[in-house]
Length: 102
Image 1 (cartoon, rainbow, N blue to C red):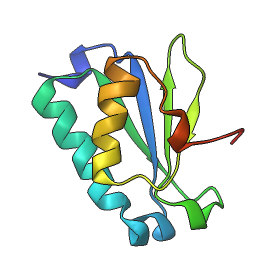
Image 2: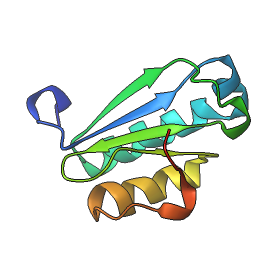
Image 3: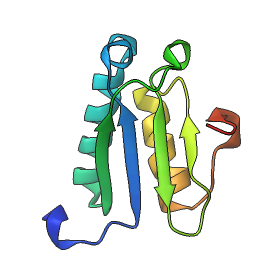
């Protein structure tokens, strides 16, 4: 599937500064990319720099129409799969993983 032809119904922004990469953001990014391509989920992926919460890295922001924007912390490849399944596909925010008011 060519993701340029699909209107994404969600955008995932992965913090990808030095601290994020050191904490495992590269594996998280690769997991998101692989899962999205394998399952054909129309999600737009972006990266950004450090937002100053280095102790909670890797951080992932999720923006989805009809749901509040949230930031997940301590994201692992396993959590990335959970975010795609629950938040993106089932429209259910995983509150236990969210940083409030970021």
